[in-house]
Image (cartoon, rainbow, N blue to C red; front, side):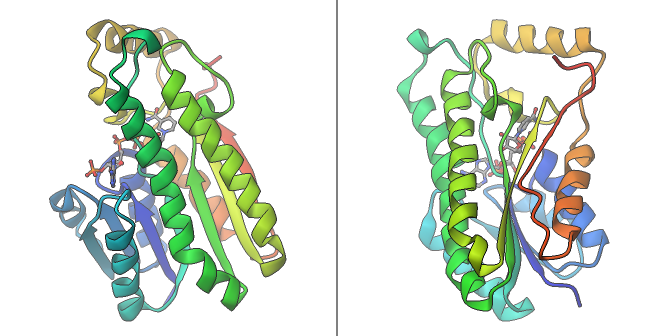
Length: 238
Ligand code: NDP
């Protein structure tokens, strides 16, 4: 049997597409999110679903230990869980900044830390962190979100350098706009409408499976090949 892959935020959008694709290629999976009913509804074989908030390090680590008891050591983690709450900074509630940094940055670091020591000891393993084009360039109304995603790039590349000599790979995948539930948590109707109009003007955005395909490609390389970064977006996106 293929090796265990952990995927965070698999209850919708990109994470769900990654889960379907890696399950289809035969991997046992540990799927994590808060909406466990959405994970279970995927009904994938050899899959453990656990209700975990990635900011809760203890339950995150416990879920991985449980899955490893069933399927063997985690060979890959895809830190995909993320939140985007767009606003102009001067009017944004500080709780929203906190949530984005907690989930997008601390949650991702929790995931890395949960698997790194055993991967280094086994001298194999892959960490795939989902960032964003918003982690490479800034956009209006995105200050805290962009800040959190720029942090994902810096942290990922820093850890890649730390663990390279242990034969552990760290890959950052940075999508442009993708059709998912991500925008639905932004409270400003003007910003949501503006974003929707921008997507329509472009003639459409990527589908979640486009990103899942990039994840599968990066992971499927031989262990001595590390795809450090993939930036992918709709061709029409500036
Ligand atoms: P969705 O909103 O569809 O999915 C987000 C996922 O993250 C959900 O499964 C959600 O699950 C999970 N999640 C959120 N908060 C937590 C938490 N505290 N603990 C555990 N899981 C959590 O959006 P996408 O699929 O688009 O987003 C996936 C990733 O892709 C994010 O990191 C996002 O920033 C990134 N991205 C998305 C782009 C886009 O245009 N859609 C572009 C670039 C990057 P639940 O609510 O059940 O916990």
